Length: 297
Ligand code: PEP
Ligand code: MN
Image (cartoon, rainbow, N blue to C red):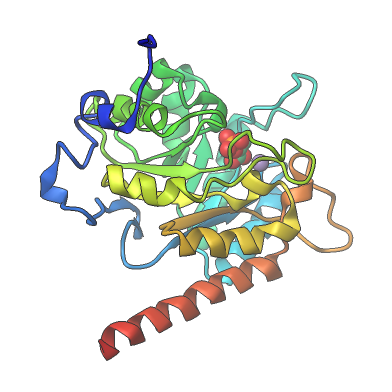
């Protein structure tokens, strides 16, 4: 029996000849193509930490969190100006005003900023304010959007669709590369599986990280915040993802000041600035231990 539309990883050289390791032997078996965003290097020697609020809610909230992110030693700022929400009645983001706030936070802290773009008509606008586009899980297969960010010549953080397989994910990345933009960072952000909201929001698919690295030379990072949906799980999930070879993390953070208002979206998964600092310290210590191991060998 043959199944129409069936794919497996052996089809990857056909689905994504521009990005498959098998069709690009110059990258060897382990080498990653470094994606540079300002001075931040994805796929370089050290895992990259992106952190910030789920959504840009106000200038005060964003600047406060951005300062904490900078103080923690993280490398980049995140924050949504356009939010993909389950209900159209929920907070949709501040739009252009949010982009301006992000730019200001980036200028003040020196951190490059990544933010989601959902609409192909807004790619130019978002490009004016952001250092990196984020394509969200819900839009991973929005092909006109992928083509548009591919043409915009700016690095792209491509999140995995919550129900997408490896071939579909890499096929989506190929749409961006096909426009001449190879500055793509993949992000595993949790898939729909058993947990389904009972004990976590999604399931962090750790196994896909080494699989991605085996099939493509693009860097891959993990999002422990959306993958778990539980603040108390974010630190453990971050460590686990690094052990599985993740080349970075994207983490949601909120202020823990008593008088600060609760985030309007994804409040349950936001970690405190203190926990973020601990995660960055963990990476510092891990890097030192790795360097010592290399010296001893
Ligand atoms: C986000 O990063 O805020 C977000 C909406 O993520 P995802 O697309 O992974 O759900
Ligand atoms: Mn979020």
